[in-house]
Length: 343
Image (tube, rainbow, N blue to C red; front, top):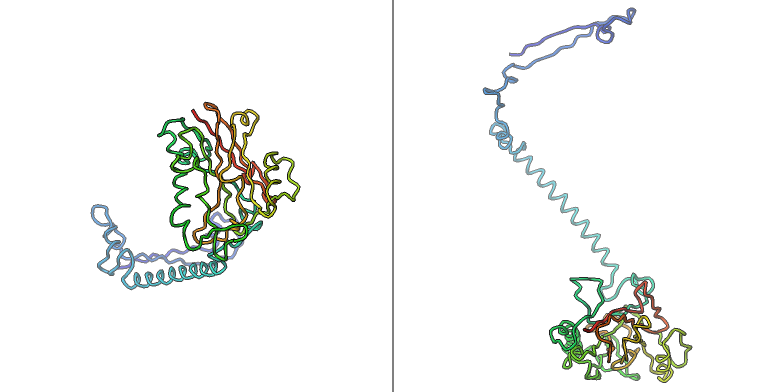
């Protein structure tokens, strides 16, 4: 049964209950309020509503699950399948278009246009444990202690294997000379057989004897080729005198990337002692450029410290010399710094 209640107010009484506008016209407005059957609004026994959350999960009267019928769930499922499939297809299409602009064999931006530029950095091995201190460049061990020097010599042994095993003898690697260079997609083998016996795996790279060998090389930059200093060029004033003499004594037809290593400060220079470069003080230009050849190995030289002072921390700086290499400590290009201490 439905109960209807009708209440009438005049327009003035409704909007002006205190009779401020006494001259306003009076029009009768009727509001009709309808109430449903009382039993539809009365709470269930015990103060609980009928069904509650259980009825929301499954309503047997309307066959609804979580407020939706089976048909409704089917429609919304199909909608989201189509929506996310379209979204994934759009993302895949954009990714495919992006990859069409890339060449898998070379970087998109080369030289000065690239992120790393055209000024190569200098790397060295062995390096301290980067998991303990990523910024450390200290080589520290005890002379004559096999276990102390093993950490450093093992790094060089692993590096050495990459030059002596299958990657070094692959079909794309070939022996190069000043008159014979590598052909297209080829690269020049590093002549590890010319490495002096003091800087070999059999000799633990000199660490047990207190005459450690440090591997020095240039970082790879695609397409970069050195513009070498030769005896025909005016050499920089800040180039070490012994290196200037070495360059002037080398035929101009044999260009190289030259290296020099010395102590950073006067005390370091004195404590470092004599430095030897093995197999030579430069890397021949025919090893470059790096063109992402399969199996390519970066050329290197060894810097051998023949008699560093024990028990003293020595700061060492190695520089690469070429017309298109501009050493900068701040930018960490063209030069590398490390410390060595032998107890």
